[in-house]
Image 1 (tube, rainbow, N blue to C red):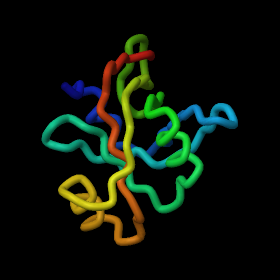
Image 2 (image 1 turned 45 degrees about the vertical axis):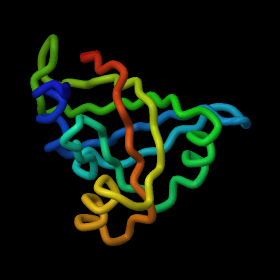
Image 3 (image 1 turned 120 degrees about the vertical axis):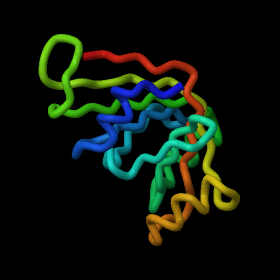
Image 4 (image 1 turned 180 degrees about the vertical axis):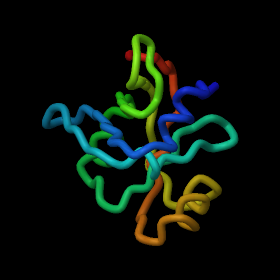
Length: 123
């Protein structure tokens, strides 16, 4: 279940950080809050225009860490809220998760689909 506060953050301007671990070590890539969509099943769907190293890392180890936040959303202790999402990722190039994003982002080559294992509000 995706918390309402996280859905509120995704409507704001902000940066999403996606961390993966591959054979060459950790890697971090960014996208925008407003690019993330949530599937009916609760997966985070992120358009991938490039993200080639991220894709290679996910093939090696599908575990990802994602942080997302906004200074415009009330947090635990005042202005600003953020989340840490731990999950399992895959890159998809066909099917409903891909088509949903392709209809919104004509430049994407794949959808990074993340099934959350835990979603923790951090601030």
